[in-house]
Length: 268
Length: 247
Image 1: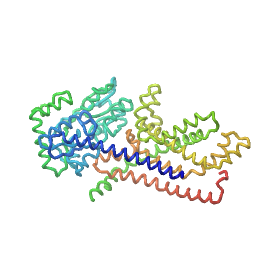
Image 2: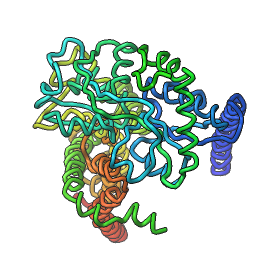
Image 3: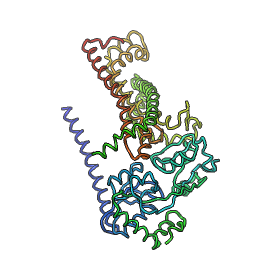
Image 4: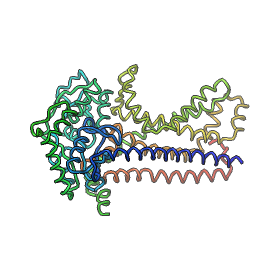
């Protein structure tokens, strides 16, 4: 008797979980369904991005926003494809695009020789700088002052590379996401964070308590990554990007997200 | 298929990064060693508090049970993130407690150890409890009737018998603890998984993860065999009826 009652209550419990999951899936399907209808129409274009990385990519699925997101949407409009963004991890992003998990990657990705061995990059769509982010009132004046200090960066990024090569840090900590590193800085467990300048700027404006001690030009630029054999799409995207720059859409998006005028290379 | 093998079984990548991954793995073992000792101690204390007799000590029993239930229910990953993200802001604590660098280990090491001890203390308390409750009631009654206090009876009669019954389940908890040390990678402690993922982003190849898995297997498989042996030995004792003998 007792064991049947136990079995019955277990069954009810499991049923409750299953129905909760079913309801959850149902509602999320609804939202994705409605949002994909609002795009520019045309065939969907699957795009991988490591979200959040404000102001390049941020927001919740499926309403992502940010510089990269809007730029990709503008390009999509030019080439008649509607981008569908997939949140993914940065360290595997190039492998995944090379293997066809998604067609393109826009994720504040610096074009590097190492990466070009695995994937193809579009023309640059952004010129990047790294910033040394520190707590307000820190005595760190620049990268040379990081000697012996505990420094944070995001795993797999050029900020981490820069830390390894140029900063004589006592300890260099690779965090899974950029905001983790910035939180560690605010908590005081790291003394500086090396991260893309716009992300650092965003942290200064949005969160406070931190400041940029130095910007380090890197002669690096961001590109949209594709699988190497996808030359057709690469050409289309390059053409779309060119149009977005020449008709001034690029400038509008740039100013919206960075509160700055874009470099002359990107003025239409 | 060959892509799969290249991605996970590229021996060149394994060879070139063997040293780094090994150093990371030693970090796992160190976290494990410190956390295991402390968690076993905390677990015993919790198990004893849970067994306290009498009405007056009810609140202590209740709080202990609440602690054990709570920390068995919350995912360790959340505890790790909360400690690492929260403790540094507790301004009433001295600096060396908020951001500990004890024994030359970085703060994520200690945050990780703390989270694992908190959670595995709760799990091991339940294992101790199973052992303690498996000791026949008459043992406690006999000890008390000889004039021992509750604490003395626990210390000299019940716990010594109880712990002889639990090495196997406790070892299982410890195996699980060893594997969970990899979770500390999320707060940027350079242990084996973090190092492997660094290699992954640098080489765009996952073989370093396979290598890490191999390290864990090498350590854990013998332990699993020990568990089997212990269970077999326990069975033998029980069938001989010697389980009430004070070890």
